Length: 143
Image (cartoon, rainbow, N blue to C red; front, side, top):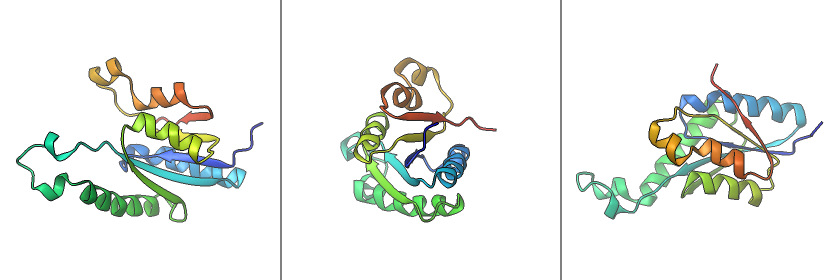
């Protein structure tokens, strides 16, 4: 049986990720593993954002600052306050797989999200990670 040392938990900071966070927490306790939380902002430069929004809401700095606060709150609410937290920008599919390699994670625990026709056609983050990861992937379905 595999003994996990480093678990990566991607999150969009929504309640749909709570079961995955709890599963990662239990596995970390079982294996005495490190947990790293990651939130990825699929950032679009201001030229692509509606002109109706104030410029500060479209800035990368504003989004990163807001995400940091939300990540802190979410981690605490999940009992994962001591975990490392990473906030990145980019395409979630690519960033998660790259972080798994860079951080030498041997397990990623993530939650699936509702798939629209668009997502099913172009592929979900969950499917992309499951197919591309060089480590184990655990998909935790909602209860």
